[in-house]
Image (spheres, rainbow, N blue to C red):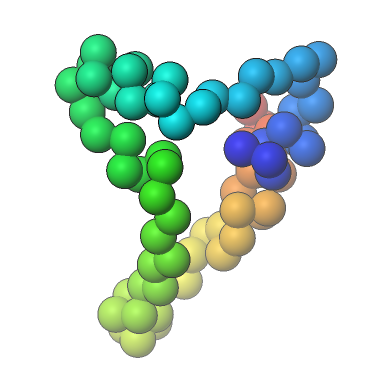
Length: 69
């Protein structure tokens, strides 16, 4: 979110405390794990097979989205 805010420069933004995310997740029937817990995932098998990502970093992906979106 920090990287996205750098690019779109909103007039203001509000942080979402964990308790608020948990309430929202309960309302829509999902879990907050993906938002609240960090995961460092390395696509080892994909890279071993020669897969190349179109956007290898969040910076490049967001730059493309902000420019084209």
